[in-house]
Image (tube, rainbow, N blue to C red; front, side, top):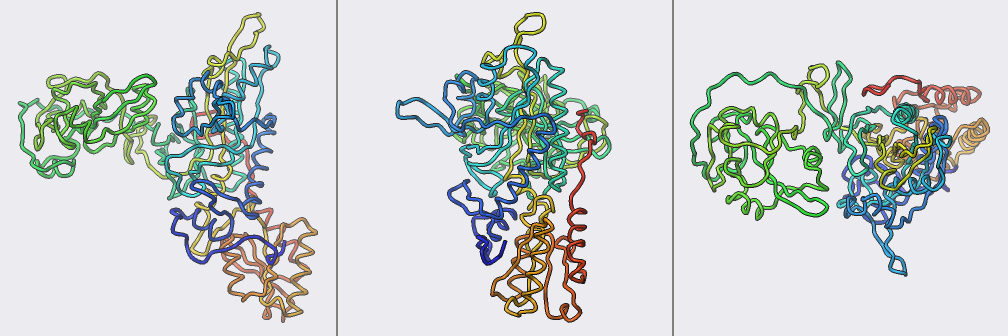
Length: 585
């Protein structure tokens, strides 16, 4: 490909809309353009990257026994109503009606559709197991699309579904796909962790996320270096801490706290540590047929984990109450809620109930209570883990200190069990003639998100640094002055030789200054750059520069192809059959 023909309009300034580095660089380097909020057009360079990621995914899915299909994007509402997710998915589901006033949605995922297909075609144990996958566009009406390709309303996803006779078969399929995912992301040249995760609206018993490690990631991972425990923040739990030192319960008493609303203000005013305060937060819990206000207690130095709260309540959604509801429930403005005498359902984190002589809100403006103790002054309907873990908390497996880092979710696998097969009546006849529900798993990879995550993890001040396996082109040839016959002739000769050798090569044949060409090459992120310039030409040589390290070698024309092929071969990581780091074997 010639740079003069390439459709890759670059930008010198960072677009104001771009929040994270991948969004900024993919826009600036001419890979993507915004069509609408959360909807992007992929230009030629991006499409080459996406196709390479797709090819790696296809190879590993096929290697694992998957068979590729293509399922419809347009889903009839009846199937989603059968599964119960028509309401559960809420406003993220793009809904529409056809000309006959029948309800449809655009598929955000395909559990219902593929289960409907299988229930019509599979009837015997002889037909199982099956692994069916597709690579297709999905649509989700995100409340606030952001972070470029990391959170979109339209995106390309690989989704595979496993169908097994029993739980043992599902465990085998899950292990197979887990290892396939390890190979996919290793082959893409990414640094990642597999972590325990919440199953969310997809459902099922267990799930793991594959997180590409990046400081700008929207997900938080808690992990242990000693035993390799890893989980995302929604799922992570801490090990038990030593019981607090014995302390006699003192007499409850009210204390005026004028204008002190926050934990910091109250603890500073009363001269107590945040661990001594118990926060009471009012939430609105929304169920399929009703909603209710609930009070949640966590220690003052902790934050409520809303996913754990939703799961504990078995609610569709939970959201912090607005000021009006807080005052209705507590009789006080925000900042003064407390558990004593509260008339709504109370859920407490175990750490909160262990605080002796706690400080809590007094359910009156400018009032707190001190020396409040669980069991004597209040009780909770439910005591459950409801807080986010923090760096330094003990690991739940070995007790060592947990660490935290950020990451971008690029893949998610689920043990669905019989959630969908029971809802949709997907059964088979066993060897004994008895009818049983098919046991399912679901396994997704975000293709554009993987591209964005690669940029988040591989860039510098000058632009993108693509890993070799997913780079749009491996080499760019830059003649310093294409109009000079000697430079042009050598650049064109190298272009022909490399292309003939199967090397994906771009030649910058534009009538531009050398500095512009070098900046564009770095911005676009090609792993290797061959510079044909006057100084090297005097010695009959060219410069080979490596984008990642910046190192330069001088090569004779006869040695260029072999040197480039060696660089490319070294840049492709080998994916082995290593065991995972999250307890799946």
